[in-house]
Image 1 (cartoon, rainbow, N blue to C red):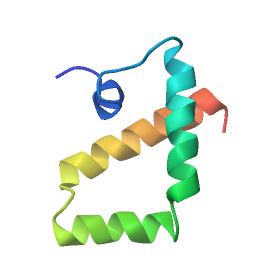
Image 2 (cartoon, rainbow, N blue to C red):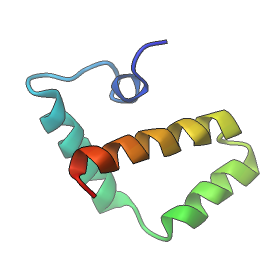
Image 3 (tube, helix red, strand yellow):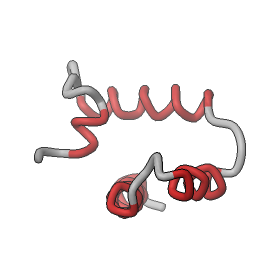
Length: 70
């Protein structure tokens, strides 16, 4: 199965992996509009995201928060 975050990045993390993650996050942050909880709920309700995918995303977000010290 591998690392879900690594897979999300397309399996390509040149140089420092944390730098690549932060660059992708900044790109996402600039493009994202609206309430994140509402957006995720809509994806879950529409079936575009399964409950398992949602749970994995929550776990990854919690890990990211711990890494960032929040």
